[in-house]
Amino acid sequence: MTTSESPAPLAGVRVLELGNYIAAPTAGRLLADFGAEVIKVERPGTGDELRNWRLYAGTTSLLFRTINRNKQSIELDLRSEFGRRTVLELVRHCDVVLENFRPGTLEAWGLGPEVLSAANPELVLTRISAFGQTGPMSDRPGFAAVAEAHGGFRELVGHPDRPPARVGISIGDSIAGLYAGFGSVMALFQRDVRRTAGLPPAPLTERVIDVALNESMLSMMESLIPDYEAYDVLRERIGGRMEGIAPSNAYLCQDGDSIIVAGNGDRIFQRLMDLIGRADLANDPDLRSNAGRWARRDELDEAIGAWTAGRPAATAIEELEVAGVPCGPIYTAREISQDEQYAARAMIQRFDVSNGAEVLKDVGFPGVVPVIGKESLPIRSLGPDLGEHTEQVLGGLLGLTAAEIRRGTQDLEEAS
Image (cartoon, rainbow, N blue to C red; front, top):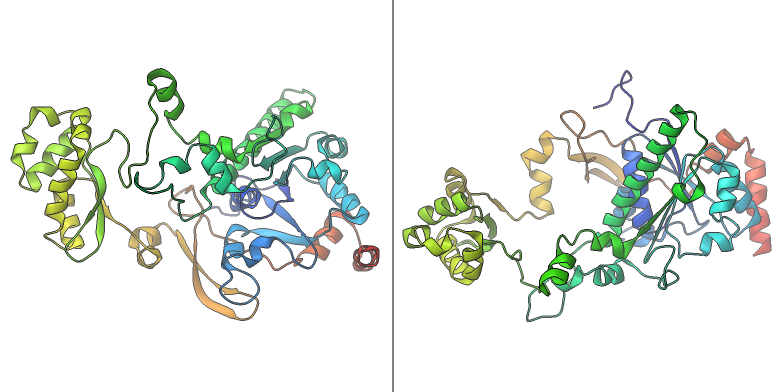
């Protein structure tokens, strides 16, 4: 936990977030979690469309409150002259700009990299798009679903006798957000190194961080490409297993719950087979290496499944843990909310939160990762109301009066 004597790692960094949906806002959340001041620019009237995603009640989803925590919200229309001028003035006071519009959009608004860099020659511009800012596909729009398929990920999710499945979150957006946050911090580190060395700011090309959703997913695909290039191996969907690793799967227990058992280490496999009463498999020379076990994965899964089917999940886990076999339950949100391990590290933090229609009491939100010290840093605030900080930010940073802010908004309304 940080204290007044030990500020958060990114304290003093100011970020202007022009993002919508999940990817750029995830990068902004990561930076905000560790102390950066993140100013989120939202479309007047409607705001970030994420406010309405998974909206079970009210006007603001808890998805928005989660991904946009620790930020400030201001309303600006970037297509208007007032919005453009205001962004350029804000850029002079910022270290990083995050955006995830379709390539060319900022340029069309007169806010391209050269214009932003002219306003702040040390600015880091982090851009997230479906396929990157260059290349023959750069101008194509695309959400994470498209990028996950294009990056090779979707082909490996699900069972071989069914069409590829999707995992239950926008993982392509989230991973791209992680890379965008990392790239932003990397560029800030380079900036400080150059300052210390007395060098001029890095050229613009080195201050533009270009994150593509499809490339972010490709980077997670381990040896997918070299295995194909070297051995002509095309990996396939294999359900709950992991290619080339056995036994490791989900197994159904007597009470209807499933557990994960990872018995794929050589010595761990021996202990697992002894536990389930299969000395024949434990002593089989063909199963002493992972390659041999993978070749007989169906037989091993059947043996383990027969053992788990004879006991409740909790009993199976207890016996496996005593034997030193990695295992665990498959949690839902209910179990996570009540888990002692998460609680001990402040990974569930509780707030009263408004959905726009009512205040929901004592709602848990996921903590800050990674941990610095012994537990999660505290969440300072949940995702803000639309435009909650407009006057505070534009007045405090730019010296605009409330009347000037209203006049700019009125000019926009009259023009539209």
